[in-house]
Length: 448
Image (cartoon, rainbow, N blue to C red; front, side):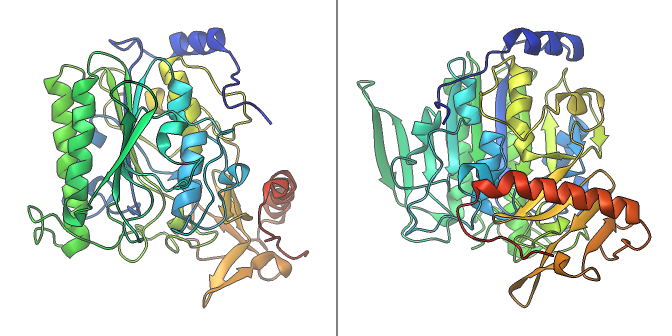
């Protein structure tokens, strides 16, 4: 197994790529703020078509930057999606593709995995503010063992018990990490996360920093901040999304106040599709919904004035596993030696290039649920009354979708396109053979 500190040094190639394709930022090492919402739906923001929830700051952020309309989480549920985002690898490689971590769970992100925070070291100050949900038992806990200098947040979802807000930061004598905990005030979690995030920005404004704001909203339970309660046409769900929007406005104002706006890449996305409430913008299924886009496709907005052109809208296919390689390219950093599934999408963000992906694999737990190309999807797992249904055990059940003609994934057109079906079936077979050895649980689909 690769050492967690083993890196592939490809600085020269990365530097040449950056010089050739990207305008220079004011700061050689730009700051990064990654805002990860919890269960925010693809259609929950005004700029993605919502008319019930007011999101003027996020809409303005999209106008001033880039919006990706075909961006996916690497899982349809929380824990595996976060593992994929932080490591640039399909979650099955990390051992965390199976369900979500529960309070009595002993699983966690292995130290052999290199996170974005670790890959940015030693050049960046790093902080995770908000929800971790990648293991709350040592050695996976606390997140400061995975490259973050500061952790201020929750070990898992705020609907799990027992719940406390933990603070992990260097001890006063700089010998090890001091871990303390505080009570949780649910209606003010978003407010507190942004407050602590803004303080981290203040404290590190003179040097490159990476701040991951992993919010708990709009995951249930919905506990609107009293300052925002009762304001939205979408009731409590809308209230908590509108609070996120207001705080994004505060964050962007802070960057301008500190004169680091042009030096800072800000990204907003979600860990998976919406669950009990929230909009998929008409996409099929929701969080946990097996092969269908509603559980995986999420909003994605990126902004850095002078580097990302204003108003860029791209339908190029991308996934949260692309963030690690993209941020390494963006900052001139060094890629981990581990085999990555993500790819550099910086040219999508800077000049609306085509996707570097020929295909994406969608997993339901540890099972390949679908193969997706730019136009086509072969869906092979679904649910019926709580039972997971393999669709490829009978020829008349398999679902080949033409995503350009049918984005809601309502019709199987495999009989019209036998050549496409054969191609995606071969891709499916290859993906199963490639990723099955990483499975922790026995969840192999029956043979056809």
